[in-house]
Length: 265
Image 1 (cartoon, rainbow, N blue to C red):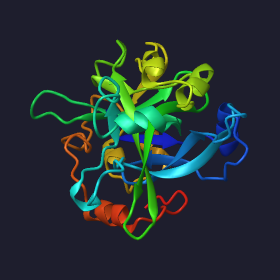
Image 2 (image 1 turned 120 degrees about the vertical axis):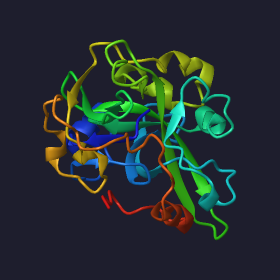
Image 3 (image 1 turned 135 degrees about the vertical axis):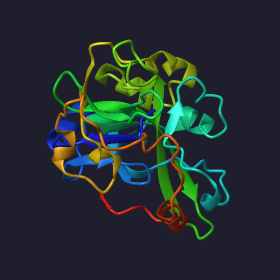
Image 4 (image 1 turned 90 degrees about the vertical axis):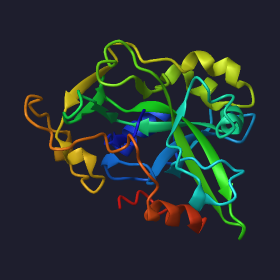
């Protein structure tokens, strides 16, 4: 699964990786959590310009377009690659609204034996620079005519080097495959199934960090500082393992308005 990630690379690096020209300046974000707005890269609407891409914001936590009452529907912040093309919640997005999510890395919690604390890890690419997670987007249309864009990050089975920490990891899309993933007109879900695979074993490095990352309110760079794994992490569980929708989540989902630019609250 992927329940927290970070985007700390500068806007210029994101522009260069995704061939963007319309991205707004944004601050580094060290602890991005479900229900918060995240940056997406989408395919252009002009068929004569197949490489055209746009940057936009969406709320992390997909709500299918057929949802009638967002307050009663859980946030779907991950979509399993093995079933995304068939599952009702993701099927339409997989066919028509595939996106990319710029990231600098993600966090995962290693579960221990019963009674032991879960150890958080900061998982970053071995090569410098931003990466792209595979994402699925849906737009919720409210009764008052307003719209809310929402997104889920696609996950797959962990590679061999990461499996000791968790059995799932985000799908990362290589730059050479951006056009194929984003172009839903030309490429059906079957045409991109081969992209939803684990990253190479050497693609990431996992760094143990303190349990401060467990609280979404902690957004400073220090949450990525390495810690000695022999010391207690200070928290019992992965904060996303059984996450319930909060009143704040419901309120933001029910407003029907786009969220503020990189609101870190």
